[in-house]
Image 1 (cartoon, rainbow, N blue to C red):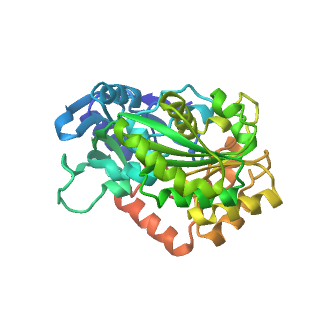
Image 2: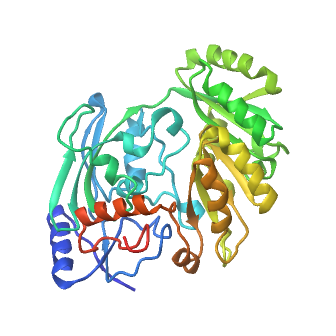
Length: 410
């Protein structure tokens, strides 16, 4: 087990990276460790734990802006925002359930490092779209910052887009500033039952093109629906296609009516209220039907991003060759796939079927031995891999930070 260094301020983070450079050591960067099982297993000398680098440093509700240390628990931030009727609109995912860990342990730094976003991404954008600025320490041992505290700022390169989703391989985030948005007054979810993936994708496309302002569109096949919490879904006995409407209570009836007219050709439409709707979308966000069950070997879980129009085609191909279970988010643009355990977690099959459709797949859950042997993150061609290496070398030339976490040799 690695020794753990837990800095309490930015200067200590800087000094730790400088020490690692001087001593020829490598660092594993973690917040609370809630996503530690995602990615290639790293072989590092020391763990740099950021959980003590915590606390909200600025919150101006009227300006819709919040700043916090990277190790601040996401739950703490969400509670503060909820008390002011605000939210992080990208609906950050809690990875605890699918990885067999406790729920609610994620940090804001880890949330941004992974760029995992929830169902509202199709309307509000991804996590990287909500980061206004940050401070960090590069693998050179140098503190730097980018962006600011307003949406429109011109301070050089937009490094926020680069840092979010880099899994701690380029720099150690120490402080982040995010835009916040008002929380919807209420919500309802419109349901269609019994659709196959092809019809469901068509229905979701029709809903997204409607004036109803849909903020979530997901399809749950019958076997997946049975694993959802809540009597409205678990007892349905059929596939469910769910479409969320959020906003002012006075606006929902008219928007729902317009949506029902648009969806009439797809079958009978029903509606669930605010409480059941929130429960449903939290379960979709956290992929609760595919949560870990405490088995010695959990089924591999893939996260596949694809053009929504190709989601049904992918589902047919995988069903024909491997079976497995799928659920669809982002109107079909995000496919969660659970397969039976195998030597490569289905990597060869998934890559072969996803690549021709222009999508990319990430292996989110699998044993350490499998993650060491296959590409966990989307496979890169030679040109893109060369660019990835150049970017890594620019920020971390000695390979001090999370070496090999995303790709071998990077």
